[in-house]
Length: 102
Image 1 (tube, rainbow, N blue to C red):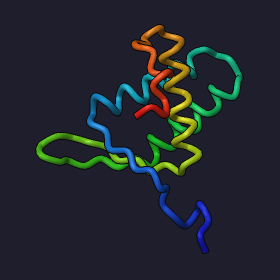
Image 2: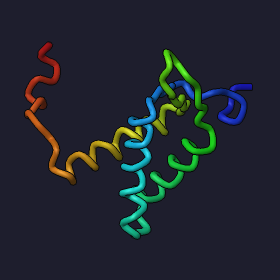
Image 3: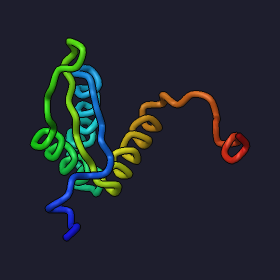
């Protein structure tokens, strides 16, 4: 039996305290908009999962959190971050022309 309820997600994400707080802060931006849209719903579900199932540990005297995501959840998280970066105007160099070249 290999369903989502009995197996761990295939994407593991290890985060320091600083990166963890940044991750949740970006998800909160979506929640603070007050809009009832699909992105806010995605952010709410991911935030709840991260806070509920994240596991704290110490590695080399540094507090960290590990969270396991299923592939579809990881894809949504990446999409939310891309949208956030575009909305905040923090994009840098144009890398699009490099796709498939290296």
